[in-house]
Image (cartoon, rainbow, N blue to C red):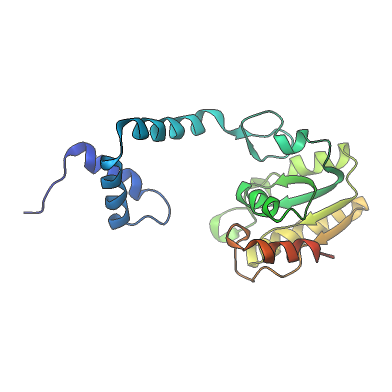
Length: 200
């Protein structure tokens, strides 16, 4: 007969195992680590989880994740108001910001065109993007979708959609490896990719 953990411990292991990249053994290790933590640390950890779910929302302007409306980047008047960098996810904004190379605004698509996953253009924040391009003084759009098939498809679709607007449309240079995600690229590579972007 297999050993059964206490019900509350089993539930915790199951919850950790639901996280991406966490297998059963890692979930078990994390659960036992939580058991060794001080009560105060566990409460702070649990509080942070509840807080993030309650307080984080989508910026009505750029569709990035935020706890203020609009987000801090959209509020920053020091940023180049004529440049707009289009990314797939909120993690990509963080990755590009770490390079300190880009000083403009962002628009987060919240995904990419991927027929295999049942995601088309209508599932992305493209309508919101087009509204921004009409209302704001954007002169250059930087397409910073991931350099994989879905990212390239999304970039191509957006460039065709925006060409008639008379904007300068650039694509980040391929300093980022093809098939990789921006989130995992190192800062130097991302920095080169941003500074070496090209017009398409």
